[in-house]
Image 1 (cartoon, rainbow, N blue to C red):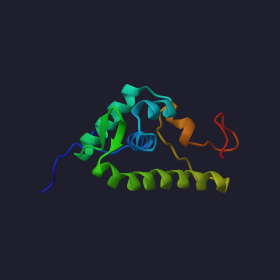
Image 2: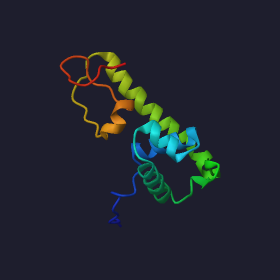
Image 3: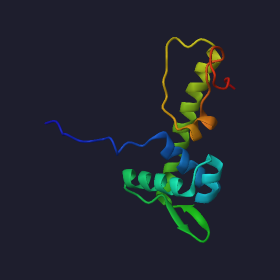
Length: 129
């Protein structure tokens, strides 16, 4: 029997992982927001969405900042591996010099500066690293 499930709002997105890893690394929602060039409420909302999708609390928030919970510590290496794999794939395409087709990646402008590269020739974007 097929289930009619709406996965539109239940998928973990790159922005979720990026915010999660920034908060984990920096120990603060505000410092993560600063490092990502977005607002603190945007990071808080994104972390809340991720916690809702996963059904677990990822951080204990308090005077000491944001400290990963047990679940957050368990999730961190997997989130890191996903982001690293995506960056490695994009870097590999850039290093080849010739991409055998078109690849479109939807990324917010504030996120694009830290994770994306553009083809070396014929592009108004920044060159590959």
